[in-house]
Amino acid sequence: MVIVQSLGKILPDQFVAEPRVHLGSQVEIDIATFDTDEFATGGFELPDNSDDVATAAWAPTPPNLVVETELLDGDEYEVRVYDIQRARRLVAAIEIVSPANKDRPEHRRMFVAKCAALLQQHVSVVIVDVVTLRDFNLYAQLLEMLELHDPSIGVPPQSQYAVACRYGEFHNKRLFETWNHPLELGHPLPRLPLWLTDTFAVTLDLEESYEQTCRDLRLPSITASMG
Image (cartoon, rainbow, N blue to C red; front, side, top):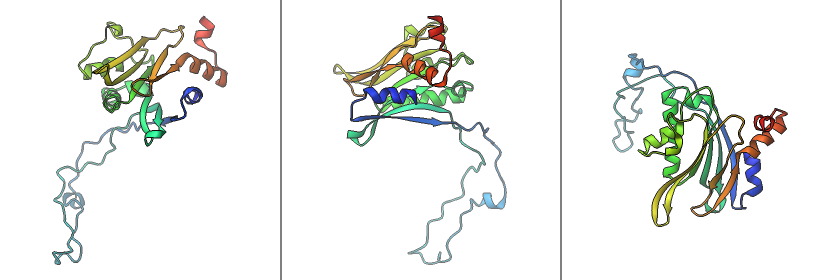
């Protein structure tokens, strides 16, 4: 919310920032299938007037698989920026990594796939990862998916970082560009470009948002106390 408020002060009138928080389900997938009469038939029945070919509804064949389950659902902590002059087109997303995004391989793949899909749609993406409980770098996994490499990541990849990414046609070339900043405890958070168009970006000041959050919640600031 503080990031949204900060962006509200600097975004041009045609852009609007909105928060999005969704806590994913932790339910495991049940791979058992069912062999009851109800599921064996697929639950499909012809209507009473099925003898009337002209009005009979098409009845699909029974499904090959019937599983009682909940699809994998991940945590989302993000800020989305829309261009209201272009039918509320999504132009930028700030993805704040949660511990649940990094705790299991399938959750990490889901997060990385989401970022890749946004970039493919020419939505600029900022990833902010301050999670210290899991030593995984989702930005590095994103590059691995795209078969790219960034020397700034280091070996092994640092697990706390903030990075801005965008993909599009710049300088008459189709380019993927990133601004990666490894994070260190006690050091100020970086400023990153938040690209709203191919040629226009605003400053995303993560340290300012962090300090404002600490003030609002009356929490001690690590960077201020160590500065």
